[in-house]
Amino acid sequence: MSAALAAAPPPTLAEFLDWEPRQDAHFEWDGIQPLAMVGRTFLHTELASRVFDALRAALRGTPCSVIRADLRVMTANASRVRYPDLAVTCSPIGPADRVVPAPVFLPEVLSETTGAVDRGIKRQEYAALPSLTRYVMLAHDAPLAIVCDRASGFEERPERETLSIPEFGITLPLAVLYAGLLPG
Image (tube, rainbow, N blue to C red; front, top):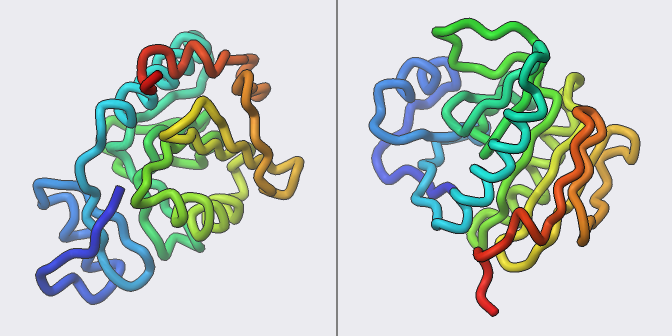
């Protein structure tokens, strides 16, 4: 989730990249201004954690790493900064790195406030990453995965029963991922 910054923002990406690590919160750069990442709900955090746990178990013993929302993904010819909920890279990453190198899989949990951005501009930005094979958006109000992959030209495809991540040999039943998180 994000919100526009109230104070005078850094005017350039280079100044933003220097400024942002010194802030108490994460900020994305939308190509024009910083956007503060605002609080997430329990559902958002727990759903991302469940996907993280499944990915981490599946990737154990491989050269790939799953990373929580604490590292940047540079998009749009490195002119925008995003913090996806999770990122998977199979490229080496150093202990002091702040940017996910060559992300291959990006899952996001949609929210009421950022769903349109995640499905619109972020999907376009992520599709332009040459390393990315799959972008998945998990609905916040129903057990639903919206999958965009390189094979389909990053067109949206709903998955209602299972979330398949063939790159890592994972199939996650959506009922299990969402168990106990949605009312009724």
